Amino acid sequence: MIVHRNLQIGGKDVPAASERTTEDFDPYTGEAFATVAAGGAADVTRAVDAADAAFAGRFGGRWGLEAFSNTRWVTLATRHAPYPF
Image (tube, rainbow, N blue to C red):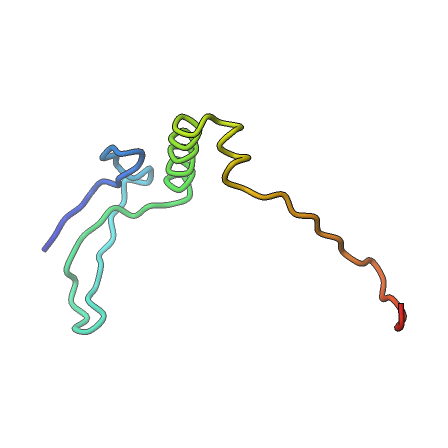
């Protein structure tokens, strides 16, 4: 059986915030084939923070945000418009 008690966050092997593990099952046979760290909301936050730091460091912060995103205008109607306009 494979045992992974840590998560990969920010290129480092770190324990799950909850320090819990869970078993992964083969859907075909129903047998447990691995024990892995049980990631939770705190781990997701750590992973997102690590990704933000890596992205900002590599692509120059504000410039990177503007280079890899688009501004969109969205208008929502607050009441039904009669037809024809």
